[in-house]
Structure formats: C-alpha cells, structure tokens
Length: 167
Image 1 (spheres, helix red, strand yellow):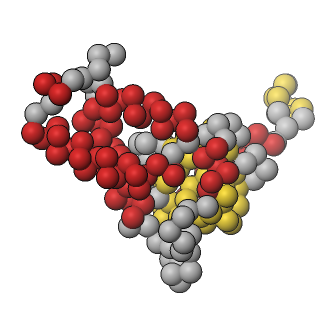
Image 2: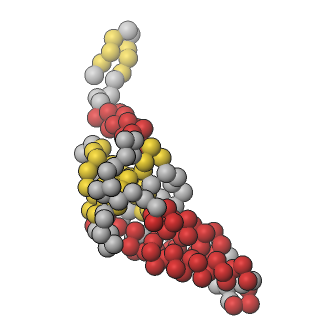
Image 3: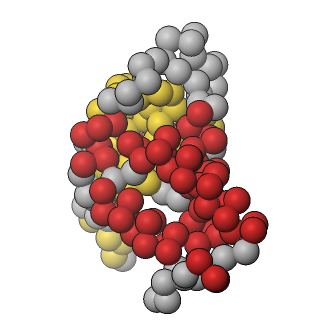
C-alpha cells in the first residue's frame, strides 16, 4: 500500500480529511480496536476517500440515532450491526449519556436472538467488527431471520430413505 503524501491530496481531499477527522472522534468509541487500526491505515492509502466518506457517514448516522428513553419506535430500526463469532448485534437505540457504554437492540450471542441492553463498550473490545456496509434496516425482519437460522442449527438432521424419514 502506498502512503499518500501532502502532494497527493487536492483541495477536496483536504476538506474530506478535515470532516473525516472530526467525525472520527465521534465514531471511534463504536469501532473495535483492530478494526480502528485498519480504518486508519486505509485513510493513509489510495482508498482514503472511501474510508473518510465511510467515517463521516457512520458518525452522522450515529448522531441521528434514537436515544434510549425517547419513547422508542413502534417498528425499531437497526442502525448499526456488529458481527463476529458467535455474536450478531443490531443497535436500535443509544444510551442517553454522551459517553456510550450501553445501547439497546437485538443481539444473538449464540443462545438465541433477544431484544435488550447491549454492553457496547464490552462488545467493541471483543473480536467483532462494525459492519461498514450495513444500511439501517427494520429490526423485526432481522429478528425473524436470526430465529430461522437458530431453528436450522438446532433441528436434528433428517435423512429420507425408501419413503421413511430417519431422525
């Protein structure tokens, strides 16, 4: 990877860098450490515009998310997705406090998907990743999908032989 120097940047790149730097300070608590290091390396390389734009997009999304205690939504929206064995977590609301240590959403840590509080600071310290390509999605279809996946993995294997079903 080539690290870009000051001469490789035009005025648009410098403006994007300035906005991205401000957004990064807001986004950083939501990004696991190893992923944060990879993103910062990406900002230094040829793909810097993609990474800076993604940082700004995610920070803006987080700033606009509902806060716990706002009355909630009838149909909650998942705004952030964290994934990594064995965790799938979809964040629908953030804590009211400026320092984000917990959130509310849908989580499956291998024992079944449930809505509840998510230890956000603990989650980002685990070997998970923030899904950079996730788009806000209604949470109920995600819950149904996770439940279907759970059923598939817990049902006994079935074999058909000569018209008989063997479990």
